[in-house]
Amino acid sequence: MNRYALFLLTSAALVLTGVGCNRDEAPDGMSEPETAAVSNEPQTASGTAASSLTLVLDEPDLFLRAERLAVLLRSFDVEQLPEVRRTLEALRIRKSVVDFGLLFQFWAAHAPAGAAAWSLEPGIPFFKFAAVHIAFEAWGAIDPSEALVSVLRANLSDADVQRSAQMALYYGWFSRDRSGLEQYIHSLGAGTARQRVIFAYALSLASADGTQAVTEWAESIPDEPKRFKISVFRQVMNALTWLDMDAAVAWCDVQCDGEWGESLRLSIMRNRMRNRVRNEDSGGAILEWMSRMPREDPKQDEQRRVALRTTFATWVHRDRDAAVDWMEATIARDDAPDWIPILYPRYVIQIAPESPREAMVWAERIEEEDRREAAMILVAQLWRGVDEDAAEAWLEEASLSDEAREKARSPLPDRPGNN
Image (cartoon, rainbow, N blue to C red; front, side, top):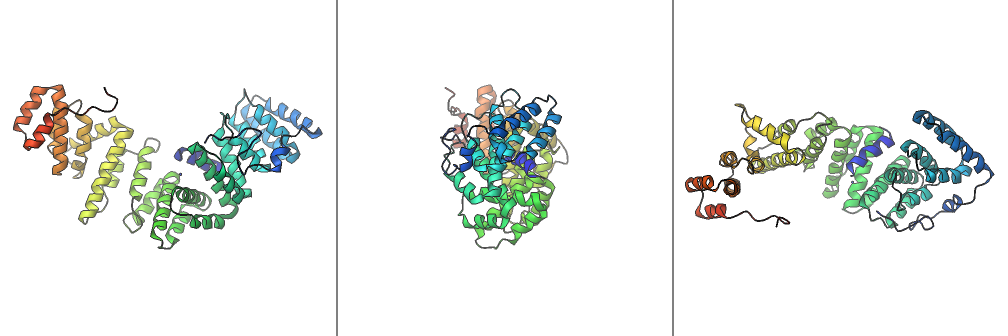
């Protein structure tokens, strides 16, 4: 996977900042002699460059235009940078990401600080994230320390832009000096900044050397400080789930039940659930995989229960109809898995508003007493709103305490904004 594919992938993930500046005022730490150079009046060579660029960009065929633009830009040097910038900023009608990307890549390669400052300016509606990524990756590969200082000083109020700039900077830094980037990781304290750079390092290492290299790196981290190693394991798993789900599951088989495996399964589950349609994965298959968690002692059993409930709740949140349809089909089977009752509380909540009588059947089968009583009270409250007589008839015979029965007869509290 090349670095541009990596950019597209992580942009979807990082879904790991309006800037107070304009074309005459760059963010702190981003001014360079080159920024002034590109604003000079065109030199003699610029006329030729302008004509050549105009001729190429007038080609209507996108693929042919991209090929010719790449060849032309490869023949340019820094003297043509002012005209390249003017051409890029003048793109209005033909807003091809290919045209923009090639022109901006040239700018970033020759003047990364100036390109970075421009990418962060407000009022750039087209390809902003591509520009931020290209500029900061190029700058990170040339001078990571200056790029780091600048992105930290910039007044970035848009968190997504900030993430994009930092991640791209780390990718560039990795390509230049991976050992230096790793030293920087170790120098950081616990927090979001460290999590982000570990994630970027893991993505870069896996992309460059393969998934085995990144898992071996994680396993080689000293056991102390423990919190740091746990952070590395979590971010490596996050990277694997984006890059290679099979590798993530295989590593989980080795690590998830060990000292460093806390929450790793949930990371895989969330990403499998997020991408299940694209990967032709099913929510039922994901639940079945989660059900294999060990349950040799009470703590493990409770962790398994929580994981299964969380998985089903995540599925309901992402595709409620599919989750409910699967549940209805599964509980109707004679060979339904023995862990299905763990899901009853969430299932009851889903069907109670429309089918309170049926929901009560399943509420009464919930294994945990406190959860069973809470579910029965909720269903009774909903039922009274639909058919008060039927609900009252059930309450008269229900195995509820007097206190619980009284709660069941009280109206549901209004949700905020539902006045």
